Image (tube, rainbow, N blue to C red; front, side):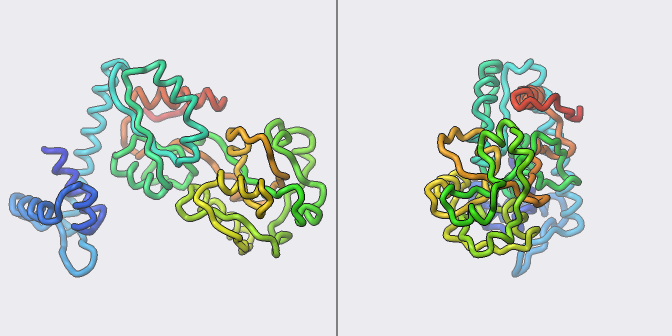
Length: 323
């Protein structure tokens, strides 16, 4: 079976639109439509219901797509098993991750991995978690490293580390006096000093009339911040929203407004200047960062080695990856 043709049907089933599917496949809409019509004639079934709205699968089409999904998964597993036989001399590893984590989490492990296994090609796909999930499910990427927003019936997830979020306040900001003496420094957070454990969490309702710097929906931190605000029953007053969390930090550091900042940025971004940080008393202020892969997909030797190195660098232990 031609795997490219398998992708035609699977992409159309996923996109539910000939025009969008054709764009994804880098082909014309008419060519895709002709291929599907010929395939239906060959099989003697109707795969798709065509109407004015989104196309849908017929019962026969649903069965056919399930078979094609298994064919694709078996083929991918075959490729990975074949690559394992080469003892990591050749192959390719496609990793999905947000641009923030690609910038601050991956460089060291990538350097060590390519030095140890120069024949393995690494491709890093940066995107938001929703599009990464779609790529992971379709087999375009091998695994993701991101916030734990993955459906457990579709994806196998394992904890990589936890990420705490803090209210970041410029030193001369008027809210500092109202928040009292519970401010902590980057050093307190990084070294877990006595001041870190002594500091009490603050509630966002004390920031009712304070302007915030927010992140836009395309940012990997948008959902996390939204969950925090929803849990706090707090509606922030934004002075502006920005594309990434580094910009939010820079603006807060200039005294423009306050922001919510993850400890991973505090630890790894190498900023010389820091703000006053306050713990947040919310469940969603602590996020679980995970390794995620599609259930049923074989774990390649390259994946195991990469994650083993990453786990060692983080100092978390060993991976319990299903064999």
